[in-house]
Picture 1 (tube, rainbow, N blue to C red):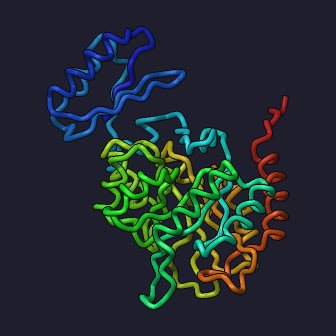
Picture 2 (picture 1 turned 90 degrees about the vertical axis):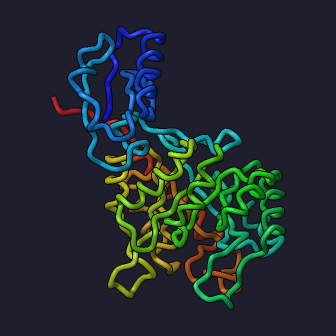
Length: 342
């Protein structure tokens, strides 16, 4: 349930109303926008008489919300959320960012890749120190040493880090290292203890859509994080498993505008994992940009044929540079003001 507060309401009246609601056992989520203030009421709201609320001096109207995700719901928070990823890099609300780097941290070549992607316009550095792999015999990542290399590259280039956390027990290590954005991968999209643990921090979380998740299930994953007090969630469409075998996954471009309609959270597209093949990555990146994504996450490697993981989907620095030029052109087109016909 949401209660829309009248413009004439004072802060004291709003505070009193919130205290009154919480005193009856409900949780609240207050969203104060430029045009209106909304109080989200979370709990078994069948116990609340909406007519009672509407009779109060400060309430404009009351509306029930049927979707199970509340904090992630645009009805609770009409204005776009802008997530501060550190180092003056923000995403959402018109702020578009590109996250780029190798699938996995392999060593000092990380610095060459990071310099190249930044020169091409990337604003955030990705790289996996911990790698969830289908086979236990595949490369699992450098672990803490990989985090240290990411931190070193971040300091040199003044770029926020995006890297995956796999285990609730490692969250404190990521905090201690100063990781800017913790990524939850597709395989952990419904690892609820992990979602709750990152939710107890205020560090931004890039939440990827699960291999076979519906859009509502992705939003419920965000709800797990936000219900613990962390509002800094970025949603990521990275392709889902379908019957199609010509690509690694099926890139659900539909999800980008749908998520923007349902939620106020920023939405990122990952064309690398979505397609699985270098030849398709750029086209999928352009489609995501045109669909209104708030950012992209793209894998780049200086020598993809020698990459320790996922080299088949990595762009070379030259390919990435070309892609960034075209992405900027698409962004200009989709964000340009449209003159209404007289």
